[in-house]
Length: 330
Image (tube, rainbow, N blue to C red):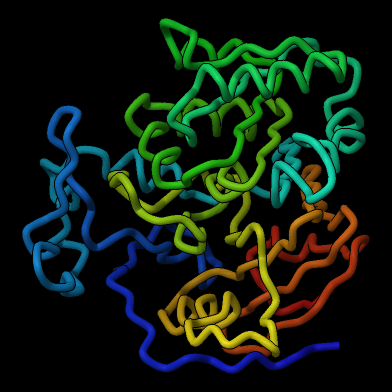
């Protein structure tokens, strides 16, 4: 049953939009950070407009990288193009890496094994979302080896692009989504991953932050912007956004801040914003070609701009989200 969620006033966004040539209204202008954060070597600095006061919203022509000399604009826009219908994509997008009472990926190991199957022998792990990549790779390697797969971590490769090109399957784990996306841009990996997944059809497993970057943008992540990627646009393997670790409002809470639902509704106060699927911990979305199915032990809440959020149980068919129109309901 659909449940209305109260919107909190005062939503603040500085995200102008650009066309990327899709017929879907929410794909016509995927959001890009108005800050378009600049990097100087290994040091990141916010633009002057952010120093001491909120940045003003700027038109696309004013954004760093928007003009003919701008670097990274083409990569950002290309990375956000939605997957074409009929693409051989295979995605397993998991809300969280660890569920209370279980170990790392313990709640989804059966789905991961079934998803990867017997043809995959090696999995390429991308640990960029956490600072200690060695320790992270060790944790992931132990889990995937227990499932019967060899795991290679991209940070151990001298050529990350070539590692993606040779990969049989890709797993991107959780952590800080801003740190993860910045590293993907810094290593020129977005287009390489898109090609391997959408054109070559290799399996992609994402967890938490790894699920965030599989979508149109990271605008609906829960993380703090501890570093500044050149754009909020992500891989665009699906034409909508996901909010992992989705939390329901606690009617008994004395916390006066916005609920997760209110923040998503603030996001949808901006024009041409795509649907947002709130995945509760324990939930995951399986995408095979043009079919998307909710799996796991918990449900999800779907947010469509201008409509009441709706509740959905495991087994729900979300294939309509993969098309150019969200007019149909599951």
